[in-house]
Length: 155
Image 1 (cartoon, rainbow, N blue to C red):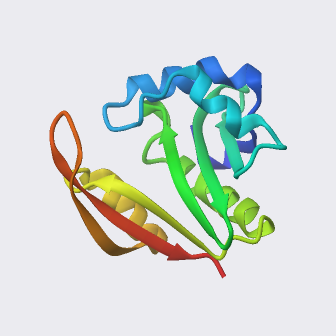
Image 2: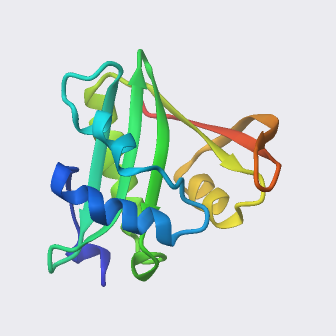
């Protein structure tokens, strides 16, 4: 799969089974229940959420992202790409589309938390331009681990 064959679109209710399947297949992705994604699909929900999926040329969802907008800040709640789509530019395309949608929602900065040991995610975020802004000691459980706080200006 090449990133040129990937299409990014808004997440819909019909995407949720596949979104949960992708998340469950990845050790470091949040393993939310399907119901946790529902507020991200509600255009009238407060706070505003942006939820996107990436699909391949065959129309199969290969990745997704969810962010919450609060004032001029957005929080990247999750971004995940199925194993077969990783390291092929899918995550980068997905994030670029998400950033554009967040700018339309008047977000000026996006932040996130990531496990301090999650080297692949840290490499991805740093390549996008995120900078470390802090640390939350013992934030994660199972195993107990620090969270690194990262932020990126969207302007």
